[in-house]
Image (tube, rainbow, N blue to C red; front, side):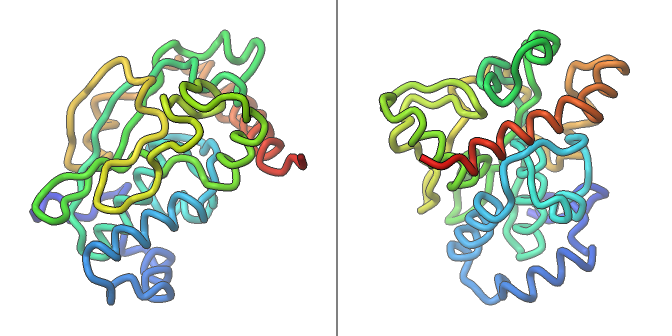
Length: 234
């Protein structure tokens, strides 16, 4: 299990901000199941859904940003779990860009790659692996999406969601797998001990120009679109 607990450049759990958070939340005092639940709920709801500058930034930067998407929230979740002594690994995929439509629109959507790098965390608890993909969207954002699309109860694709159960997606962790984007998966890269290993082999399919545009323009537009949904009044 030691490979699933090690610290890396990305999983930087010795960082003072990470250690301070663990101390404040007293996660280290909880039993293993309660640790996973508390840390999972923190990353899901207290770290807003949003787009960081890159996938391969360290957990301490994601915590400072206060927001993340599938890959960066996976990094933070792994880091906090490892800091609390819970073994975990990362599973890499690609997903169809269709599930991002709405968060990204117009010319920027057309320019984005069809297949987007995606990941979820797998946590070892009670002698088995659980898949924790449902951590991606914070509840306030998801609730607003559901309110604004209340005629849809089953399959919904867009705005960071691709699920067959939009009315009640499996995002709560109680010794189960959680999902919110899994229906968009179109390629499986397998499991990796760390995100550092995943990103050394797989990256978003963006050339240097598109990467610059995403970092400096597109992600800010996407974050404004997401925030607009989250704050919209009925």
